[in-house]
Length: 139
Image 1 (cartoon, rainbow, N blue to C red):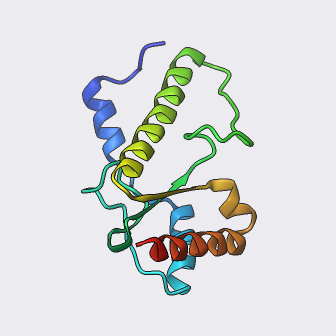
Image 2 (image 1 turned 60 degrees about the vertical axis):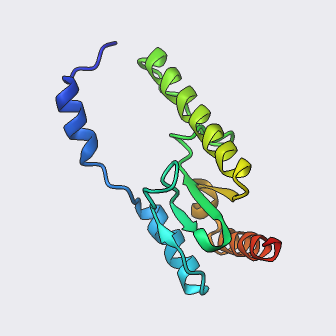
């Protein structure tokens, strides 16, 4: 099914989407309260990581269960499946490309799923802090 908007209309609509989600705000706030200092949505880094600590070469991505095809919670849309399949396939490919880029450059990459934050924020933050501390020791 073709897009119902012109290319210009779609571009204008997509430009209004903000870089930060409420879920990212909750997670970042919890990390900040634990004394972890970082930058958010660093556009100069490939893939615009949600959280970046350049000093220790750490990037963290907060992945939505829908857009990043969570193996636990993803539900495929029933309409316009050809479009969505192509979209989701590209999202997953892009995630892999970005992970490879950072790993080849010696960075530490972590993905945090939406359901992990919603399910047990404290455990997710504990796990992330442990990941950051481990990455710091490796330098």
